[in-house]
Image (tube, rainbow, N blue to C red; front, top):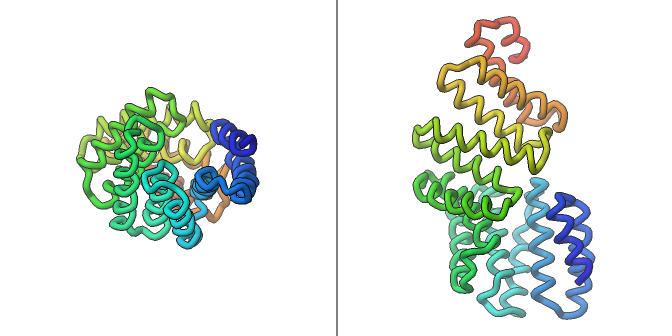
Length: 272
């Protein structure tokens, strides 16, 4: 239990790699003791941390094994089982791009959480966040927006450090609807929260800078767009490998914006 508690504390502190090692050790002990709910909870945390590190290698077997154990050893209406479905949905959405499947698993998770009367919980809100993302990818913008507004409201009440991610996707829904002013407000809120929670030099802030730059570019405010695209580039050059496609994305947008500003020599440097 102490290993599990320590892992949870480390997640709150953002020490995900160290937290994973604690959950792995705790999972072994819980399995030996036949504490299946705690074992499944540990496995879910391990998978979630892997996803946080963009480790989406084929985890189908391990995810289905977690669900099998949860069904065999636990009550079918259980929070950890619902979270197992959520993780399966995340895997299908991000790794496989199978949005129909991801929606199915997110709905399974939400149904179970609703049956447990935990709609006002972090588990429900996190699942709703991913479900909103899945809706967005499938073009169901209004449904995605409705879910994300609920998530932002709940995360805000908790001062949850992932509120920046929710604001960012909410901004994407407004952008898709052509409501660029509302999108900009969301992207700025996302940036502010991500700087506070993750620091200036984080991939989240780089994406926020890029998105803000997109809005200013659409408004033909090219100098402002250039400032934010440049900010994204500087972050990515500091934290990413030179072969990372996100860095190439920054160069492409800086090449474009310098062309608009008639800084042709600078534009060519970024296009090379």
